[in-house]
Image 1: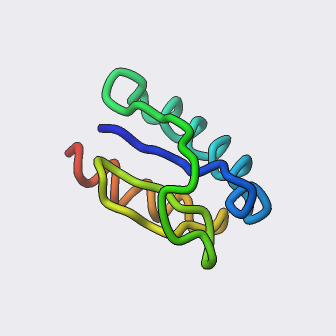
Image 2: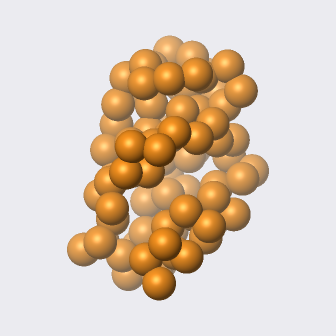
Image 3: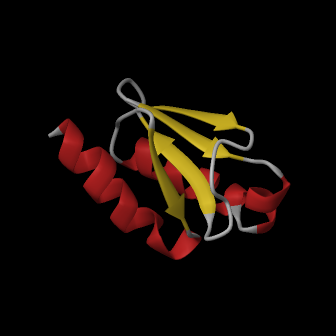
Length: 80
């Protein structure tokens, strides 16, 4: 599974660094390093409502307070 996190200026201001760190921790905590690849991207989509994140090409607008729920629904549940 490929997860891309936008790190352009708008997303950086919207908390991209925190989201990257939280996703890295969740991948490690769930022992998914061999199944999930995190990578940075630049201006992939609509950044006005949060950080733009894609999971295998599907786009999401994500805020730091929603990372755990996002991870469960879009990563854990899909890999189960």
